[in-house]
Image (cartoon, rainbow, N blue to C red):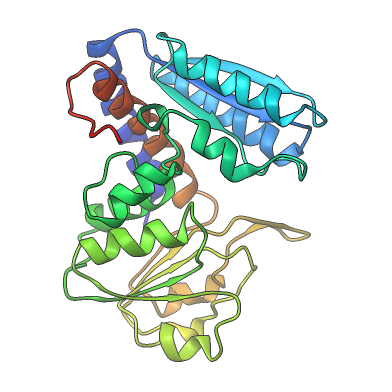
Length: 279
C-alpha cells in the first residue's frame, strides 16, 4: 500500500480547499529539545506551506512552567488567524500532559486528542480525529480492503493511534480485537485477522508466521535502529500478506496529509461551514 502516492493526491485536494477558503493557519507548540520532535515539527511546517497553510511556530524551553505553556495555548485558542493548534508530545515530566490537551480549544484540536473530540468518536459522531488512524482508513479504502464484516486486530492501545483506530474500524462494522505489548500469544489473534494494524513501537514484533495469508497489514511503527528505519512488522510478512504498507513511505506520509485535512476541517467548523457540536 503506497502511502506516499495517496498522500500526495490528498495534499493536492487539500491545497485546492485551502485556496477556496483562504488564510488558514496551523500553530505548533514545541517544548524542549527532543531531536525527533524537531524533525516532526519541521516536516509538518513544510507540508503546511506546500498546501498554502501558514505555519505558526512556537517553541519553549524544556524548563518552561506549566502555567506559561497553558497561557500560550490560551492565546493561540483566541487568535482568529489560527485554525489548528497542535502541541507536540511528549511534554517534559513536570507538565501535566492531560491538562494541556484539555486546554486546547476542541474546534482547533487537529490532533483529535481533546476529551470532547475523543468522546465524539467513541459515540460514532466523529468531529476531529487523530490523523494517523484516519490515514490508515484512507489507505484501506484506496486499496478496496473490505472492512465491514472483517476480523480486524489492532496491536497497540495509545490514545493517538491504537484506541481511535479500533473505534474507526468498529464504526466501519469490522469485528475488532485490541492487543498490545503485554498480550500473551499475540499470534493467536493476528493469525485470525483479515486486517492487522500494528502500532506499538517494537521493531519486527509481528513476523511473517503471525500473519494470515491474504491479510491486509498496516505497519504504523517507525523505529530507528542500526539497520535504519524499520517498522513493527517484519518485512518478510510481504510474502504472506496480500497488502502491506512499507516503512518508510506507508503510514507516515498519510499522517501528515490527514493532519492538513484536519486543519481544513477545523477551519470549516470555525467559519460555520460545518456545524461543530460545542460541549
